[in-house]
Length: 451
Image (cartoon, rainbow, N blue to C red; front, side, top):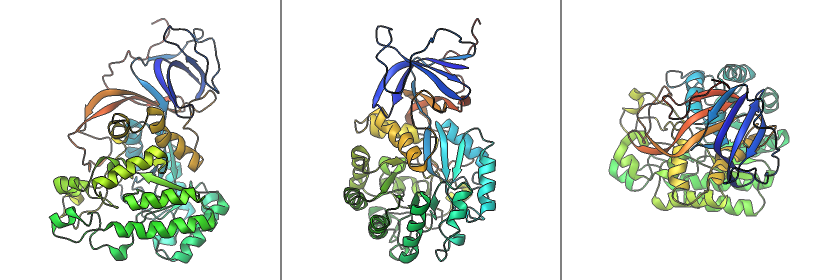
């Protein structure tokens, strides 16, 4: 048994924060015991039951005084580079980084080598993921070898455990093929997600076609490249009825298109990364390749539009697009270095700093976009704070700060290196087991009754 006492529970479904103790047995939450300011039981929220919390504490006890307790975070856009590029990251190191960041559910992208366009590669990823301590899921590819010409055996891959479908990293240009893929995903009841950048409009990827491109004396990647494919795929989503995810949205016009598509009844979802709601193209001027990513960081108006989209629910998912690269790769000239940054270990902190502390979202709203909504979309267990749920939790101090100086990821390609961020994860619990614990915790260490 694991007993967590004195924490502030974040319930994203009930949109409330309250002090409570939590009892965990056999990997499940078996009791949530709210306390009023006077120390008496409150009226219990929906789905929460009373229990004899003072009895039978024969197990570990975590004193969570000063900490917030939330459903484990879920990231539905992650690259672990395994198989094929494990010098950047592998499933084990990626999972360790995820646990440190408070994540208990991960959905991997399929642009590995070989790509996840077949049952054998999918099985390899899922079986290795089972050994990590957190829940590792994976998308399968939309097209064979990510060549954009032929659909994968989507029904077979769904039956083998694919959480969804994507060719993330390579935009799909064949409109008829995209429509067919959406129709198949609809039949299979699986989400399908798209990297929206028309390569015909891009001279140099990863750098916004504006002030940043001018600084590097290149043409860069204009916003029109994203808008073009977003418009096409939102129209196809409305036509097919598929659950479509617009990945790592970066342009204000794309957000408005998404907002209108939702109003028209399309089953579409917007995904925002912490770097796109935290930074602008100024970062790539200051930090070079460490702030180069696809789509690129754009202007302040775009950043604020992303935040407004998160605030009003137009954008319902926060995902990191965790994209590890080696130091040698990122040290290449800006036009040659690969795009992408890591994000699992800084995501929660950036959400706290940029969205909660600045008044755009409450803690329940932040956790909804980082846990509840992604779990619901991909059919994953988690995202709720209720008796009977799997005990997948993150315990963090919202105001304590830490300096970004090292990572559990194999890679360190982060534009936030050296920054002081709020939000320190103390424990990540998955299936009732502690999979990450902050070193030299200022909390009272877990103890046995009678010690």
